[in-house]
Image (cartoon, rainbow, N blue to C red):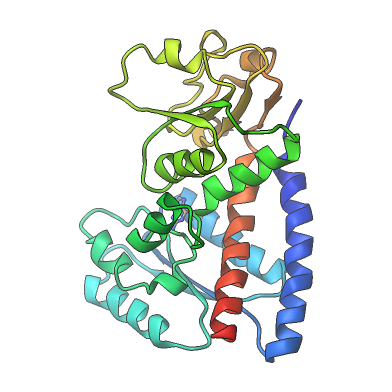
Length: 281
Ligand code: GUN
């Protein structure tokens, strides 16, 4: 069976829209997300456009800062500093990756933990590691929401995550662990990958290589989540060989229309959460 992220996202967004309206009625302003993008990478441009569009859809305010590749590091830093101190701004997102030559870490460190709607800060990642309330990174958070829709009890399941990035693989592993899965994280140096993935009840592919996960790597009846968005000959292709893996999986996410739409939805949820927390402080 397919898990349609698009449908889950639409349901979640209509709920967020109601909550945004209630927020505005209570506090007399809209929640606000500021998005910063540097350079002309077409994929990043599309993501940012969709994030801005997503804000409008649920009735949130958004600020959009676009810089050409070559803008001074200090200019980006000054913008983040200004937004950090602006009480009308609830969330700050710097679209990654930044073009070569910029010090990403220095820029991200200027985002206060409370406005880190990506959940990328050491504090937010640390809170997740400790299973304490914090901002959860959007993509893994969206995956958990999609897993919820299957109705499958995650407790005690073998979960395998392929990919160990700070933005997806690691928080994904921690979320599954917090849901009582037995978690294995695989990466480029993993030996006998197929032997490990073949035991997975839940398999999350976050590698960034088109059709990397083939049917022989998947257990019969597994839940397969495809986080990959690769462009091949102008077409979007996931990290999973969907056509063949679909025949073995109990649930599988398509690309496009799977995890992608959920990521932005969780960004909106995180922004509303940040706005509410700030308004109540
Ligand atoms: N680039 C690709 N995905 C993301 C994301 O979720 N957040 C940010 N800031 N940059 C990204």
